[in-house]
Image (cartoon, rainbow, N blue to C red; front, side):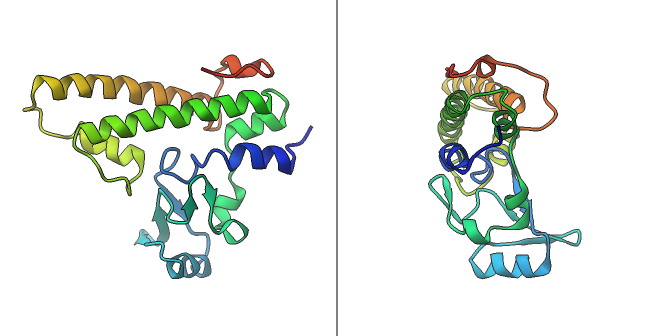
Length: 185
């Protein structure tokens, strides 16, 4: 059964992980006109290597919804996460997928909170960039910082596992979401 608009509305608009800097660090504009349109909307562009891209989180994101959905960039329009594809193939129920989304959103918020505790409060940067910056900090820190850092590393690893298993293509991992209507904790 193909994914219906109602299921897309329920899952995608409750998610936003493809736009908020959790799944991706940037989006490449497909055409020069698209780049100009994004720039006109206030989206700063990076013009390097002959490509125009913008950094995530996207400034057009409003909570978990795209503020320019009808006129979003081509890459955004064409993207479907692996979780949505698995729902479309009938491998995962919409209810289980929603539970997975909730788990990933919660885990990403835990990582963000730990980043703030480690001194990185730049919410305008992609999560992976922020994590990399913290991992490159000097090591002359106190014991409390190291305790937070250890928790941070474990949480980042857990988040990476969830993202790889459920949102990125070409994965073979299976979790409880394979059973219809079984929420993932």
